[in-house]
Image (cartoon, rainbow, N blue to C red; front, side):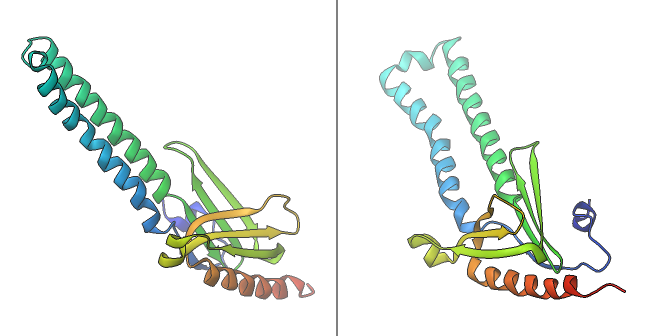
Amino acid sequence: MHLTQFIHQKSYEHIVYQMRRHPVTFIPTLIGFLLLLAVPVVVYWLIGRVFPTLLEGSVSYPLVILAGSLFYLSVILFFYTYFITFYLDLLIVTNDRLLHIEQEGLFARTISELDLYQVQDVTSEVKGVFPSLFGYGNLLVQTAGAKEVFRMVDIPHPENLRQAILDLAEEDRKFHAQPKP
């Protein structure tokens, strides 16, 4: 399905920004999963050193291989699930509204939508060494009617996006303030 059908784009509406999480935020998870992939090799080596007869048995050897295979399958499944939730999180800014599509697992997704003319406050947060070095952070949007803060996490250049959203909101307010004949 095309993105414009997914967000039910209006005829006068066009996409200004389309952002995902910053790719560098995925690196620690990738390193963790790569380390997990080494665990069965280390365990196999340790079993070979401590219990060498365990790897020679007609029943025990297939069980060790089966356990290692199940471990690899689980690690790959968790990696795939995390990658899907990472990659499918999406922020879409149009000239009329703000959409945040948040993937919450393989089969769950939350879509939040804000009209730009209702935006009251936009805050960008860049906290820490890595966010400062790589230029990513959080964006918080407060509207007139919402009690909760609309929060986008780990997006690239949040300060630029903050200013763009404020400019688009001001432009959209002018459009909505026009008297209708």
